[in-house]
Amino acid sequence: MNEEGFEIGYFKVRSLMKELGLLIKQPGSHKYKKATVEHIDIPNELDREFKVSAPDSVWCGDITHVWAGNRWRYVAR
Image (cartoon, rainbow, N blue to C red; front, side, top):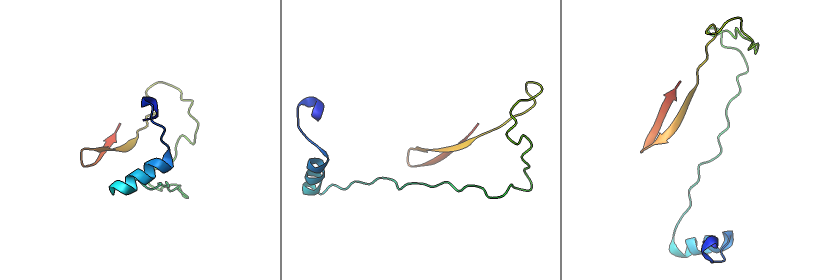
């Protein structure tokens, strides 16, 4: 709205939303747990030594999730 020439700030938006009965919903903060012990079944073989002797000898993966449509979808790569 500022770009269109309207002077508007946080408090004005808040009062207009209150007047119109609109609510804001923001996700809460998320705190990831830090592992305190290494999992016995999955040893840390690299131990942060990322220099390997040959290509294709060490692999890693990642899993994340994204909100798609009306539910969380998990993506692994």
